[in-house]
Length: 224
Image (cartoon, rainbow, N blue to C red; front, top):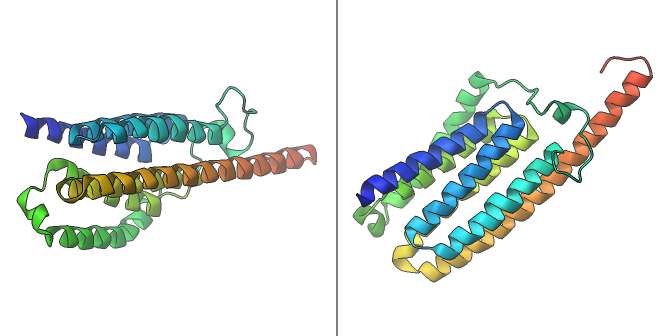
């Protein structure tokens, strides 16, 4: 029963991450990422780390989600966006051929990670579905980061890569030193939040500059 519970949770983690990374509608992709973060919080609780679950809800879902939506300009206090993000849709088409070739280094990185994990005695004893989900999220995030050109989507991939690393770290640390593992993950969550904040503000600024360029071009009689 417990194994089935973990398998369902693993499936939910991977599914919500994939939907958030590859949904073409930007607002829906950010909403799916918030759902993914809440699923990660459930995973922390399932692993026996309620404090990490609470921090994931606050930092991963609430604050990170708020910054992502702010980059899109959909917050109540934000100005209406102009330029590319004003359509709230990714204007850059996916290049699956390029992504396939860029997937090869990601697969190599996942393979090396798997070999490193398999060399640890504790891993051989109890691999666990959640540990597998961490490896899959790591590889999926790397592939999406290589495939996507949109900055906001790369920011989403950055967060999912970090989540995969955190799950792997804690699945190891809970058998060796849970307190040290929680400290590392908390530090990682804070760093990921600060990186997301900086990335969202930069995306918002770049979009504002793009919008002013489009408006200036239209005033001068040019096309958008």
